[in-house]
Structure formats: structure tokens, C-alpha cells
Length: 67
Image (cartoon, rainbow, N blue to C red):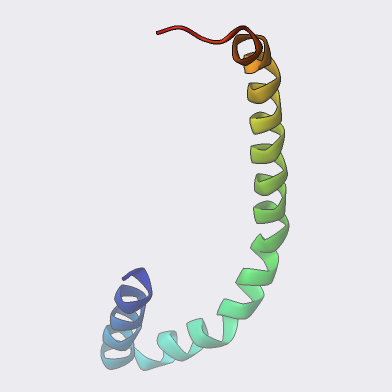
């Protein structure tokens, strides 16, 4: 769904201001490459937080949490 919205927004930009749309089309892979290390860092941080959460909840799992 978001891909369709991005495509529609780009087509609207192409109709209204085609030089900017073409510039965006050329620069988008470079922007993606620039943001890639931040995405990888986010994956590492999420994994670390999931590990810490599992580590803190381990005693409750071993004792059998009662609701």
C-alpha cells in the first residue's frame, strides 16, 4: 500500500515539477545507501533490547508466571 502511495506521489511530482522528480529518481539510491548503516544499527539495537528483555523475564518464565 505504501509503495502505491509513493508511486502516486512521484507521478504527481512528475506532472507538476518534472526536474525535481527526475532528480529525486537519480538521488534516491544514494540516499538509501546513506541510510543503510542506520537501519543496520537499528536491527542490532532491537536485537539487544529483545535479549535484555528475555534475560530479565527468564526467572518469571522458569517459576511459571501466574495470572
